[in-house]
Amino acid sequence: MTENECKQDTLFIDMKYIVLYRKLGFREVKKDVFISHYDGTEIIIEAESQRFLFNNQWHQLLTYKDMVKLECIDRLLKKGYGAEKLVFDERYDATLLDIDGSAFVGFVFDEWGMKYERLLDNYEYDGKETVFLYTSQLSGGLIEYKYKIYTQEGTFENGFFETNFELYPKRYNNVDSNDIFNDGNFIIVGNELIKYIGDRAEVVIPNGIVKIGTGAFWNNTAVEEIHIPDTVTVIKGDAFIYCDNLKRIIIPRNVDTIGDNPFAGCPDLIIENLSAAFVLEEGVLFDRKKNLIHYTPSKEESEYIIPESVEWIGKHSFYKCENLKCVTITKNVAYMGNNAFSDCSNITLINHSPYFYYEGGLLYNGDITQVYHYSLGSGVKNVIIKNGVRTIGRNSFWNARKIETIAIPETVRQIGYNPFANCINAIFIVHSPAYTMFNGVLYTSDLKEVVCCTSRAVENGTVLLHDQTDSIARNAFTGCEALRNIRLPPKLKTIGRGAFSGCINLTGIEIPNSVEQLGDWAFNNCEAMKIIRIPEGLKIKQNTFKNCPGKEIFY
View 1 (cartoon, one colour):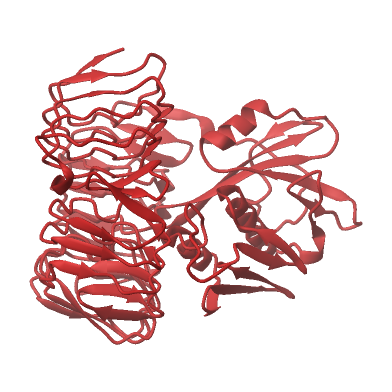
View 2 (cartoon, helix red, strand yellow):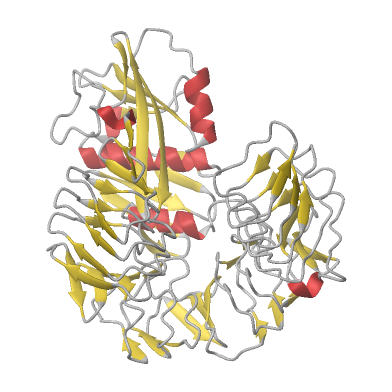
């Protein structure tokens, strides 16, 4: 493979999976090579080659299922099972051997979500060996996993990974994790608060809750104060995101795990911390002073120097900190989550870290192969991405409304979930063979997927899409305020998450019969939406048409 060969829709340069490697404890020892050491063995990931080496055997990293396999191997090794006890043959995706060398468990892996649900629905157990159907994902900055155990004695969902000390457990069990409690205010599954659906200003989370789920209070504008019980140990990513009126929260003493900034989008929030696992220093929350989780948006300072102990700047950690004009990235910062400085309308950066490079308002990784961030305060209107960049990271240009042109170099091979969302005035200049323009719209080179459509591509309130288009990518039209109507292509199969969100003047939509998947939030905040025509049988997710007050849906 040549250096400039296109590798679209692959995982090795996807920022989310680079973050996964690091969450698992892998260290990048040289360009695109990651290593994690265990007791007596190691795993080596060659991201460019899309493979990993374990027990002198190469395994591919081409699909999400492959990522599940890597994560499960890592989990088994960390639990204490020896590398020699894991074998790979045609029967199962992985087999764990017993102490005597016989098969103890056969693992079957699949991607989190619909594919795993189909695996559960269609799997036929032969009644012989013990089999685990296993899946996992990186969500909100934390790794989640689940599995179902098939044995001759029955099926179980607990008792293998959850056992703290015992290897090769002889018994499994089922817990009440599938029991759902809904009292009109809280949706609770097992011991996890999945969703708060009430409208109280002061909320007391029930005692006994152990986890506060990802997005549990998402966009709840009624809540002003939340009381978290001492039973909580985990606060997942985005738990309280966009709670505009949330004023006060105390992190209790037993919390030892916090995901991606749970407090992003809470402009007036004051946090207090009682947990020894975290440090709250002048309104900035750290995980043991190495990971910066949250910077309080209401802080009045215009400049901030990140402490030199910090190695990781978390996702959304500086979200909407409008008072900040300059942040200094210090020498030991090596990692950065998605969208760390998004919607900081006045921000510029000073970089002292060898792991990053900053020029022309753009923050790149150290070897200038990936764009992480565009500084809204830089004043750069005509952006030229440096040649050599392979990846434009997801959300890296979020809400950059003043940008007029963006030049994409020939070396770019992947564009993350529309990093240009809300760049309403941008025109693209494309040199990459992986992407192309059609009627002012940015596409993949085969014209099958719409990547981004800004208001500059719209004429007389509409835009003409290519007839070969079969996918509208995540956030592809987000913030396209000039769009009033559109005819979707006849071969369209997928409308991605948030695809038309914020198209405030879009008046109607007719979804063709060819569409198989309609993403959540796809038409969120389409305020002018009146007529929606949907094929019979097409599943609509909870927030697909959220905040479309005058809508009428016809099948």
